[in-house]
Length: 387
Ligand SMILES: *Cc1c(COP(=O)(O)O)cnc(C)c1O
Image (tube, rainbow, N blue to C red; front, top):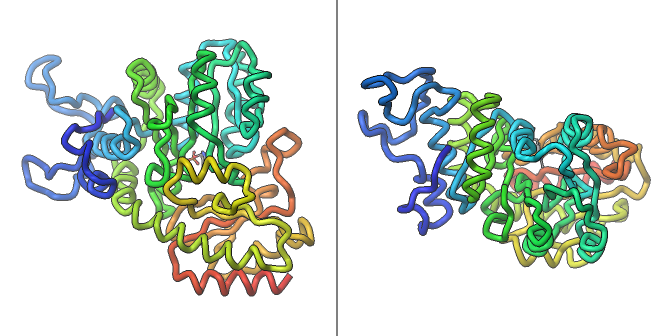
């Protein structure tokens, strides 16, 4: 578990991304954090060690990335996991049996599956809530709620929610607020500074940023929650390998410049889509009529690299668009340098079919990469013209 270093607390975002937790190696002077493969660490006397004993419990490469990302989230503690879902599973373990999870009614399909199909049968009830309706949330708050779980922007509808307002409602009622910050990343939004108790990431996406590592991350500034999650991290053991930790550490160094380019390219794509005759609706938080636009404008530095749209001609046409691009690769996942296109109802969100989290079947989701924007615009334009 990395603890944010005081000296980096006031430095700028990219300075922290490149230096927090990453001092040159004291024995060799290596500027790049070594990949520490040793599973065990020599002790000077029984119980007298240098901070590391056994690599599941703590590993130097992992500590570097824990410190780096915690610093970017302006959180006191950070913990890396083997995947985003492993991180989520460890967060859910802070609940007591019988406590309810309120899940925003648009969320990553795997989060829904974990809460509804794995945790709920073990005695942790859940319900889906519309988090754009704060009066409704206050009025219909279930008394057994222990945790409210939200994404903003959501996957795949990109709805945005007011983290500060939701945190105030939840805290008045004694519930913990978890924000999945995978889509925004700490560069665009820092939920802990807005009142969230826990931030969770799929590091597989923008943090890693190159589609070559699966990872998860938890950040919190709450001592008690940090202690509980660190305990189960070690007890249940869903830790990332040193090499995976290194890949995330390396990816995060360029997060700010990648995110700026993702946002810029996404805007070029949105400009194409809003005027296109084949498009029924464009979903992007910057659009003034987008659900949660005001919350996004208030709490985000920019609007992100994810763009979704609905095709007028329906499901089959949406699938044909996803098939017809050549630079946008038809694939699941998101958040890396290369642009991806997918059909959520048939791919990432199939597990939500028939649930309150079901997504429209004429929806296409784009993860806009950092290629040259004119190539991306041309590619999508020819795909839309071909359907
Ligand atoms: C991918 C994703 C996850 C799950 O993360 P994995 O690393 O695939 O386990 C969770 N939340 C969101 C928003 C995601 O996009």
